[in-house]
Amino acid sequence: MIGVHTSDLLRPFATEFFELFKTPWEFYSAGRHYEVLLCCDVEPQSYSAQLLLIYSEAGASREDSIVTTVAGALEKTAAARPAFLSYREDKIPIYTNHTHEITLQIDENGLRNDGSPAAVVRLNYNLFLEIAHLLNFGQPAGNAATPALDLHIDLLRDLIIRHTEYLIEIPARPAGYSMIACLTHDVDHPFIRSS
Image (cartoon, rainbow, N blue to C red; front, side, top):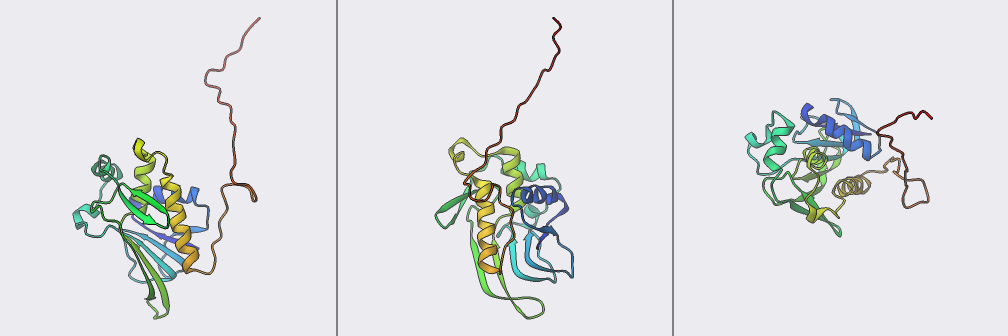
């Protein structure tokens, strides 16, 4: 189970993210054990997790981190040029980071509050604010061929698989196939003809 710890403001975007990354998750509940605890701009005072993922912008002032509306946060970043996170052979565009230096830090020897070992991964951007940006503004034409949202999912999936025993996920396509197609018919102006 993935526990998600984020502000109330970003919960709708966390929910939307997990509509695409189909794996068991819930919003963080203190005192509960999680295989993975994913935190965006918050760090729990106590936790029990095999993997702690912290998405939080390093170097941002507290005033930058406190956002009263998602629209206000997105307004500050809408015109900004993206920074890029290099991960494996991919470059993931990050539109909401104010420092323009994206880092991924992995501490294999972290400790849980009870003293048992846990991996701690820090990424210096807010995942759910990034998802909000992608869903509200999309990407500029220069990055249109980059599946940014899918790359965020791939990165999270890879980190979970690397640091936990297993990951339960419902794939977005049938087993044994590389893709799925859906054909719909949209009737905008229905009317009845009389002969």
